[in-house]
Image (cartoon, rainbow, N blue to C red; front, side):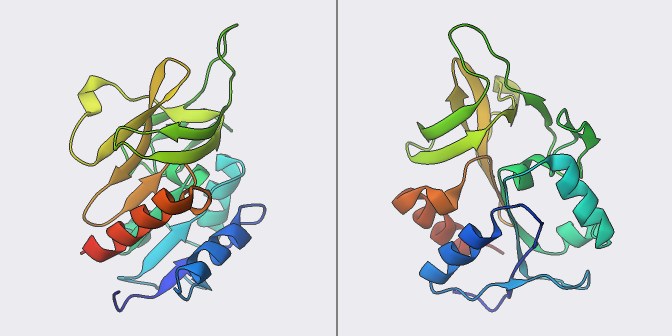
Length: 191
């Protein structure tokens, strides 16, 4: 597929085992990231867990914006959220690589404050979501590569695809054929 190494952040409490199993099923060898010297590789930042804990883990390894920018990134759920500017959970400051703030999904009598299950996204595919914080999607952020889904009646950013990175609020590793296809298509097209 390409000559880059696949490395994952072994964040305690994150869904690392599911990520490893997913990539093994795709016949892709994946290893833990052991230092902050990686360049031009594919770094997977897993989801599940508290964003503040994710940021603290990244800081403990000496990984910052420049490290992230020197690699291709696949960020999932909480991994996606820490790429943003401000995160209400914690609260904490994200890496600021995506121009969004992460806010708690508010509840009302008609809506739950958690977004879970398979949801259709603006790319016409259904992916598995399980989160209670999200980036709001509005018409100002509509552009190529930014997709949305709904949490109740509110539009949220579901995923962002660029030439270099893939950021998913959902879990591609739990999204069946659409998650597999999304990862394959991204890997075929990264620069």
